[in-house]
Length: 100
Ligand SMILES: C[C@@H](c1ccc(Cl)cc1)n1cnc(-c2ccccc2)c1-c1c(C(=O)NCCN2CCN(C3CCCCC3)CC2)[nH]c2cc(Cl)ccc12
Image (cartoon, rainbow, N blue to C red; front, side, top):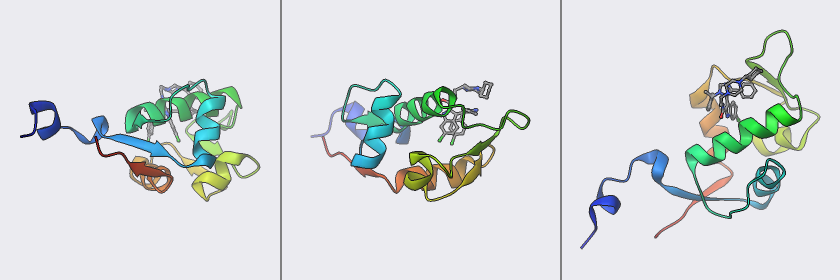
């Protein structure tokens, strides 16, 4: 039988494994694990964007990642932080759900 935590696992508590390209970026942002929650992936990606100053200084919700490995991972040159659905879709292409 499933424990209560397994039954009502919210999306952001589901465990995911990034592919090698994304894992490399997360490690550069300080991650030391191989398996994450979606929320953890986003927190580390935020740190990565901050550390490499990829956001637009004038419009700080615009991220320019074309010349960076992040652009290759997400498949875009620029994105807006104000489009979370688009952003989650781009990030989840690089994640595999972990059965536990
Ligand atoms: C709500 C959250 C978010 C989270 C998920 C989504 Cl799908 C959209 C939005 N968010 C709001 N602004 C940002 C942001 C903006 C510019 C540069 C860096 C981060 C974020 C992102 C975080 C994050 O973990 N954010 C912590 C607090 N942020 C406040 C904004 N801070 C700003 C400080 C001034 C300079 C610009 C960033 C950085 C820390 N993780 C992300 C990962 C990506 Cl792929 C894209 C964006 C973010």
